[in-house]
Length: 463
Image (tube, rainbow, N blue to C red):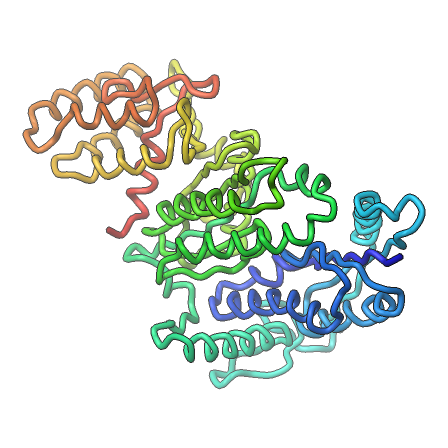
């Protein structure tokens, strides 16, 4: 008989993403990653079922379980001021001797614990001076006389330790301390969030294979990232089936496509999936923004875009969605669609969110096809500037927009640098009913155009 222990680390998102300073984001990420190794090395569980993404599930004997319940939350909260931990234990006997039933009960208990308030270690009193960036108690100042609270200090120390280790391994590793170091020539970065599909339904079916599956999945995700990453990029969350990275806006689309391909390929070799599925798929969201845009808002948008991609694919296929943040204040994705991506003129209502874009799909637009269309529109003699005018005209009058599109196509035919047959072929590859003369098509039950998405990517590209 054993005891199934579970812990859920809360406040990870806020701990990592509440700052726009890259060294603090990286440091916070390293601290969170360190929790996983700390758990294994310190408490040496009998069997680990999950240890990634801030979730711990493991089986202990009685004395070891007592020790971890008393000490683990305290030790982790001391390492990362600002996060809290909920924990629960299920005695594996009777109906809970079955690992599946014990896991269900553990999840129920953890949900209860998460709803109970926990006092963080960095609580402040009114008489304490606060760091104006974080509203947390100041504990020291850096060499530039910048105020530092305990969490910020921990993050910077973790960053320094990480950089020294990585620089020893590879002298080409760059000391990125500000997000601006990752931006392109237009001061644009991309925040990418990717998440596996169908894990919630799969995990309860794995039974005793869950522990080895978790290890294999973590390795598959890490390898998918390593094989796709570029130099100007930093992973912030990477474990289990989750990935969140910051990168140069120029690299985001191709990197995300390659990562999703790698994820499918790598998970196809996980032997624990035999009898359940051939491979795992994943969805991703890309939020393009200015380097000074509040980082936690961009992360939230990337996660929302990922959720929309999952919804569009019914969590069955790998696909992605993206958006270029142009407004100064944060909005939900639904608000973005209503305010920025919906065109209502005198005759029509047109939506500009043409995605999701799939890795492979005979009936939906693919990432490859989108890239090919964009490359064609980058060529000499491109009418892309005129298509921006056409998008503006769509807001005013359907008839005038049609007249302008006819004029654009007439001019394109006469332009010896522009191959209108080539773009027609590429547009048809993107979506069967598209052509240079038909840029508004029925999709997902409404009238849509891909031109806004194409203009988004071209506008953030520094190339």
